[in-house]
Structures are given as C-alpha cells and as structure tokens.
Length: 385
Ligand SMILES: Nc1ncnc2c1ncn2[C@@H]1O[C@H](COP(=O)(O)OP(=O)(O)OP(=O)(O)O)[C@@H](O)[C@H]1O
Ligand SMILES: [Mg+2]
Image (cartoon, rainbow, N blue to C red; front, top):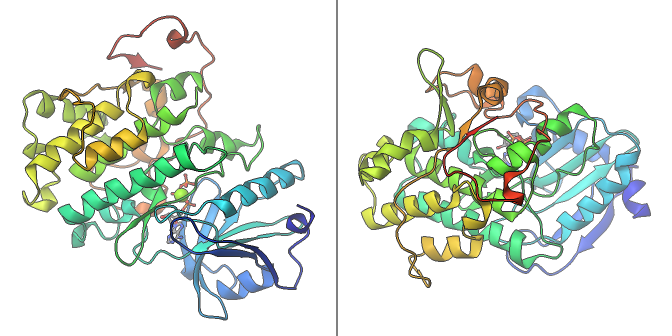
C-alpha cells in the first residue's frame, strides 16, 4: 500500500497488471498529477464531462493517445487515505465486460484522482433523458442488451468477485455506454471512500432517491437486494423512457412505479413502452422484462430475485416456472424525502439538462427507527418517510 499512498510524484510507475477474467482493460497504473493535468488541459471547463457526488469528471487524452475520463475527487482527509488505497486495490481486481474497471489513479498529498477509460457514448442517462435523447439511438435491441449486460455486471459484483461488492448507486448515470452501446456499470466500490461525517458522503451513501430500496432509505439496511431494487427501477426506466421520479405540472412528484402500476394491472404493456420507440419492440420480451422489474421492486427484500435469476429471466429462461406476477408495488416515499430530492425538485418532466446531477439525493439522514423486517412481514404498499 505504501506505493499507493506516495505515488503522485513525477515518475510513471507501472502497477497492477493481471489477466482479465472478463473483458475491459487488462492493466491499471499510477498516473502523475502532472500527466493528468496535461491530459485534461488543466481540468478545463471544456473538458468537463459532468459532476457527481464525488467530484467532477473530465475527458482527457494521454500522450500515448488513450482517451480517458478522470474523476477528480473532492478533498479528503488523511484518515481516508488508507481506505482509498484499499478501494483502489479492490477495484483494480474487478474485471468484467460490463463493469467500468480502473485504468489508474493518482493519490497526491491532497488530491485523489481516478482514471477510467473514456466511454464515447457517455451514460445511459444522456440517451434516455439527456443530450442524446432526441436522437433515439437506443432501439429495442440495444435497450434489452443494455438491460442484460448491466445485470450481468451486477451478477459478477454480487456473486463472483471476492469480496462481494454491493454497488449502492445503480442508476442511469452510472451505466456508461461504449462505442458499440454495450453497457459498463461504473462507480462501484467508492461508497466507502469518503469518511462518515463528510456531507457529500451522506449524499453518496444514501444513493439516489427514486432508485432507493425502502429498507435502505429508511433503516440503512444494505444488502445485494438493495441493488436489485435499484436495478428494477433502472429496468423500468430503460423500457419506458421515464424518470424514476417525475415532477408533474403543479409540483406533485410521482414515482415510476406509481405511474406504471395501472398499466400493468390492466395488462397494457405496450402502453408502458417508451413512445420514442414508436411501438417497435418484441412484445414477449417487453412483458417478460416488465415482470422482472416488478419482481425486483417488491418492498420485501427477501422476495426480490437475485441478479442471477434476473439475468435468466431476462434471457427468457425461467427455471422456477415463476408465476407471472404482473403487478407492481409502488413505494411512496414520504413527502419529506421527496422534498429533499434536489434534482427532481427543480425539474419539470421533459427537462433534459443532465449536468444538474439529475436524481442526486440531498443529505438525507437515515431514519433510525424500528425495523419492521426484523419482526414481521410489512404491508406490500406503504408510505415511507
Ligand atoms: N468513463 C466515462 N466516460 C464518459 N463519461 C463519463 C465517464 N465517467 C463518468 N462520466 C460521466 O460524467 C458525469 C459525472 O459522473 P459522476 O459519476 O461523477 O456523477 P453521477 O454518475 O452523475 O453521480 P454519482 O456521483 O452518484 O456517480 C456523468 O454524466 C457520467 O455519465
Ligand atoms: Mg457516476
């Protein structure tokens, strides 16, 4: 670890080369600050790809021609240094075709920078709701392959890598698209980077309202099932083109499950399809995918499928003969939580500015209250908050 913590001088150091188990880049290395500064034109505004809970992301090009995305973390204290090193070590070992692995990092006295491969088609968010949404580059086939690929990335994190990793912030801006529109899930493993008590960690740990599993939003209970819940919301978003939380004219906020519920009950699956697809889809696949999403967003975590089952179901392979559920549970976040949802509070439906950090949930405190899951099964549809 010593080399990790003292890396950011001017020399180039080769680091974690190893054989990839899935895909993606095979090596990472330590970058110097100078190198990254030059690559990103001094972290200029023109190079800025966006901003999230951890800091800003910049496009850059290294002297050997590699296009990179550099995440410049907000300042961290010394206690976090070891955590940073450990996290980087873990991330450096994660290799899967659907996970955005580490290309490198730089850890100077007061700087933390993470280097990834640049994804030319940016995020799923930019295609569903952002700058590319009018171009409709995501046809049905691409959407299904993005849904399956993202799920496969999660299978790897939950079931294959050691130690297992819970993402905690599955959402459209964390699914990046390569030049072939294949999905790469990003930002796993960094939730622990910023120590408790630092405000933007609060934002980060709490994830993004709209995608948050109720047991996590209310009691801070983290498990793989939280990711499954968020994935279910993401899947609905991919299929319907709607945001997890929409602000209706008049200011009322509505979750995607509340919107979808009546259509699913009536079996009107085609009406759920993103209108941008103009009806072009495989109807059986649509029905199956809606069912998978409905299974994932059940309020009781133990009733949700695991990600392996999700992949099997999406591929049309149904070993358990899952009875088609064809109903969806709507989690109604309490008003106080909705009011803290910074992004949707200043967005009307149709707002397309991704740079606002859409969906980022403000510093919500986890409510330390009685946990109903510990004692009995909770009601299926509940008002949380
Ligand atoms: N490797 C990359 N290639 C291209 N764009 C990227 C890359 N990494 C991040 N981005 C884009 O940069 C922007 C900021 O990303 P960042 O991860 O910091 O924030 P976020 O995903 O919006 O929120 P969060 O902090 O919760 O992850 C997003 O629009 C994201 O899609
Ligand atoms: Mg992100």
